[in-house]
Image (cartoon, rainbow, N blue to C red; front, side):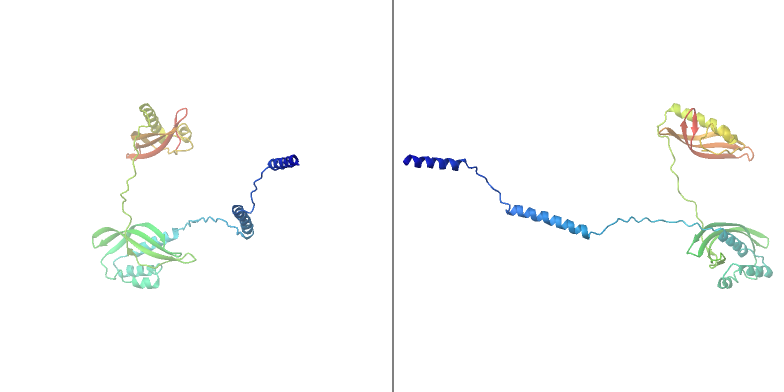
Amino acid sequence: MKNIFRKKEKQTAETKSSKTKVKSVGTRKKSVTVLWMVLISSLVFGIYKNFTAIDQHIVHEKEVIETKLVDTSAIESFTKNFVKDYYTWQNNKESIERREEKLSLYLTEELHALNTDTVRADIPTSSSVSDIDIWSVSQENNDDYAVVYSVEQKITEEKNNETIHSTYRILLHQDSTGNLVTTQSPTIWSIPNKSDYEPEQPESNGTVDSDTVQEVTEFLETFFRFYPTATEKELAYYVKDDALPSIEKDYIFSNLINPIIQQDGEWMRVWLTVEYIDEITKVTQISQYNLTLEKEMNWIIVK
């Protein structure tokens, strides 16, 4: 009995030892729960956004500036006629009265009344207009224009003559039918003066060797000797795509002045002055060029 008991006890122990121990991970642990909550929340939020999303379009605004060309021919002609009548008179009553009648064709009634005594009946001078220059016509608004002009007058007083130059500005109104009227008296103004601008002068930058400089210079001398009298057919050997026009003038080549030659890739850039003598006027004619040359069978001017 004792042996049987021990045998059973041994078998029971072997059975227990043969079972594999399994460590299970609980699916309800906090970290797993949190991950599931994040996943479900993301899915729900995505579905919500899909149904409630509003289409958004990026709008690129492009500003288009339209240039409106205004024909100022009528304004300039009207101004010149007005200026001629306004600054012309003789020192006698009849001439001055005729001037006032003519001015009524240009001025508003109020302005005409204002200018009635600008030239008095006892004025000792006479005036005639020698030249008129229109310097600018600018649109003040839809129907009003400012005109700046200069007038050259010959003033005579007894036996003395004097030429004067004056600049003024007036305002004109143009109605829907194109008719014009002066709305402002000639007001003392100024004209543009000489600008102090000096363009940057090109210089040789060492990109061309001396042999090429000599070769290009000889080509230019040859070309400009016959250029003034060359026909279009003759120019085709030296000029590409009408880069220079045919002039066919009686000019005698004198010399090239300070040609500047620079390498520009496969091209040669050339700045030069050409001096000619005009056969008819006998004066020296100075022409300045900015040319681009390329080498084919020979040098040719491409622009």
